[in-house]
Image 1 (cartoon, rainbow, N blue to C red):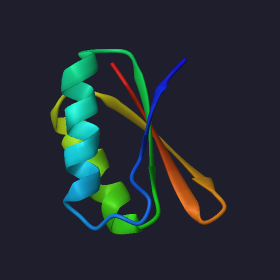
Image 2 (tube, rainbow, N blue to C red):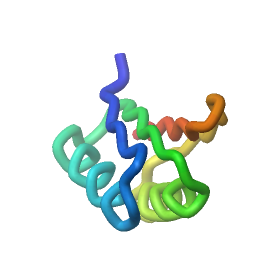
Image 3 (cartoon, rainbow, N blue to C red):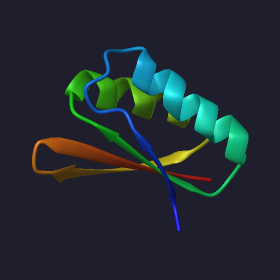
Length: 70
């Protein structure tokens, strides 16, 4: 099961920091990052891609779910 990072309601760069912290902690696997702005989506996606993680994006109502995998 994927680890989950809920960053709804947080302004950048906090969602990026939260996701990066979990990525370093896990090293590999699957992480679900929940954000609520397109800016957070874009910034987390950019950071994860640079770190070598795959990113799948899904819209879930008002929220955006990013599934990071490595």
